[in-house]
Image 1 (cartoon, helix red, strand yellow):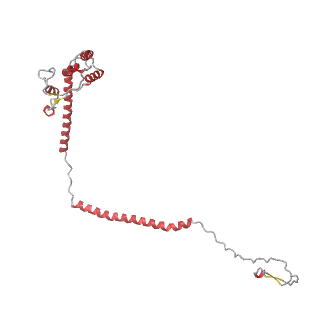
Image 2 (cartoon, helix red, strand yellow):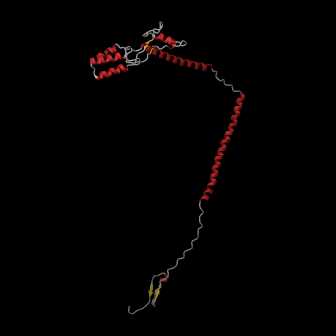
Image 3 (tube, helix red, strand yellow):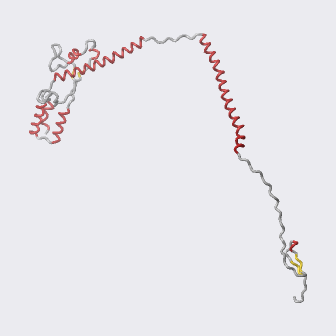
Length: 254
């Protein structure tokens, strides 16, 4: 169903007013009855096609600006400032400004202004050329300034300056050794002071021990003899360390 829209691709109408393009698409849609997919595809194609290919510099303008301005190169030469050398900064091709097929900027019923489009493209190219020339001019000016500025000349060192430098270094050497010796002395003196003060500080910190009281010798008291009533003829051996009672009695009954 898209074969009915091939004339728009093969024979584009960049100067037609947007009203004509919209009406043409509408009549083709009624006649060909494309599917929804084709309608969306064609609408996106003709409404978003804003890129235009570049033209060569010898391409003719749609309408001459003057009797001697009929190509893009002549238009650039007439627009650019006279102090610029166009041969050095001339672009190889003419990049035109982008525009859509259905451009409503100039109105829906008026054709597209091609001359204004070409003039805008030439002015944009002139701005790019001038900016490039300005950058190159500034770079050349900086290079010339660096070349003309004199470099500082180093004064040759005489024997007096060398002697003074050697004298200064000879004076600085013992000073540095003295400084190192003083540092070591201070370190060792601090260590000795700490070693001397450490026992006194420990003695001051430890609490005094109370005096020991001599314990009284304990006396072992002998066991008190068990007082028992003894009969005549009995001898108690317990006071002598023998737990025994001797009985010398004689009884006939026994």
